[in-house]
Length: 631
Image (cartoon, rainbow, N blue to C red; front, side, top):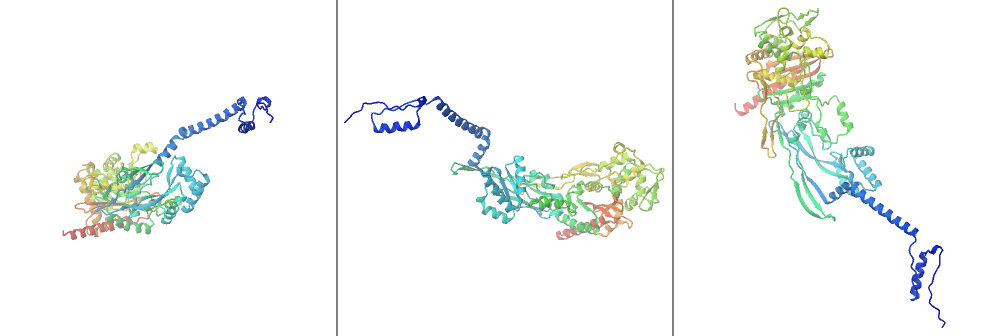
């Protein structure tokens, strides 16, 4: 057997490099020959640099990703981790209930279901997310473009979770719940909505609640929102990485809103609406307002404006088209004319002029002035009265609404020196004109009491005697709200006390215990001695009793009353505002009614019809209550 000497196998390569195949050949040879020696060689500089670059690049990519997820998006993913770890569940609480003065419920809470979108829960696969949006839009019967626009808008506002649709139909709720697995970012949330028992007749008083993600609301619902709103309870659940519950506890107890009792008399408010609605509709008048107020406390028993609106609409899934339709409807108005409507008040201003004239000694109760149907002005024009009244004293002037009498005692005529505009303004302001009453509603306006300085500055003309004559009969620049008239006439009825009108009577806790009661608030008192006001009251009583009185139709009622009417010109020919203010009973006033019918064709006394029927209801109801109680 021939033997071969031991020798090393070398495979020479250009440049002394070794290839991968050589390594495997070495390994194979080693298995066959135990004397085989392993070939070792170092990596070339070129391969080393290439391998280092690859590792360096991978390291940089990992470092960049780490920086992005931990620093740039750290808070976002931390929040997502917390959401996975901690789950917060709300415990429902109830918004406070609103009652009338006799504890008749005006508002209730009902269950509703909203569709909520959480942008953080959309699938990472964009196509899957788009499919989810398409499916949600189809179920809602909502254009996909509108849904995308809403999502974009909320993103721009920084809102990650928001309501897509409020108060879903029962059928849609069932579909979403049945297909819950198909929707990651959309879910059904149980909510509550307000239901208003007498919607349109109370809408301007009670108003409505703004939705959670919207600003707004109105009426008592908005003004007393801090008292009415509920605080939902929260149960906090902590889970481990596998979704198992570690701990569950209530972090905040639910707290229902407080209940509110209004001074409003539901039956009286509804009766006013029942009377006024057909009068406005059938006469072609624009709108009407009635306020009933207790002249001894300032409690507002009725505040009605027609046309009104359906405040239940704001508890539903109201679309933009439906909202615009409401705005454009002649049968809908969001404008509360009782507190915001500023009107020329016509002859209803005369009792206040008379009070000032008596106080200043310009006239005595027995002073008479001859009315021949008007007065001649220095510029050659004639200031008309609505008829020739002959000789009139204070009672007759108020009862028959004689313009000439009030022209004379206000601006003076011939040898008779009148009050003058400065004193007239002073007394009007004492009675509360030109300032807000402070009622617990938003949107109240102050009306306007004109002055010579104002006219010169704003209009550029001096104040003329004709301007004073206009103010004396409630025309020209003078403006007031129906509520201001109710407050001012309350002062005549109660002996000279200006009271703050109040819609709310008391606030109750969840167990209906009184926690706050609202007492009468006096703004001013003793503005004019009651001896002078009694003469004015007598003139207003004559307005009802005299066959020539402008409110004679009230004389046939079962109870006594005193009144003053007014007809104010408007910018349209043969179109007037009707005004009438009444207090009753005459001997011991319990209520003041201030009513305005706006834009009445011709000089129809529509407001007299409304006040007469409302007074009749009030007297008959009270008589029935007295009989039932045994008095």
